[in-house]
Image 1 (tube, rainbow, N blue to C red):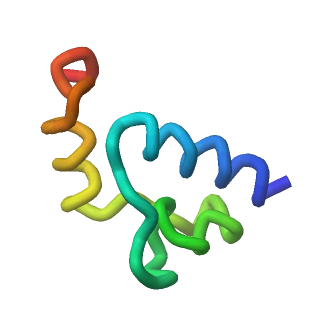
Image 2 (image 1 turned 60 degrees about the vertical axis):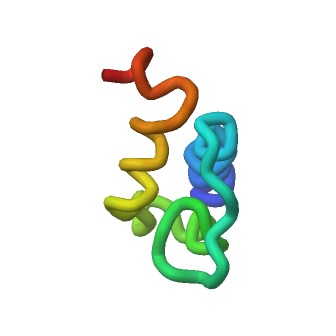
Length: 59
């Protein structure tokens, strides 16, 4: 089940403009989403979401 929950965090990240992470770095945008809830968005990814095309909607 964690893989499905992690995927429900990972895929909206793409919708908000984030690419896949280059390595398994513990973020939800890497293969670490399989280990949900142990994955997080790093600050760069959070900034990318807020500064992306839908950031005004989220803030």
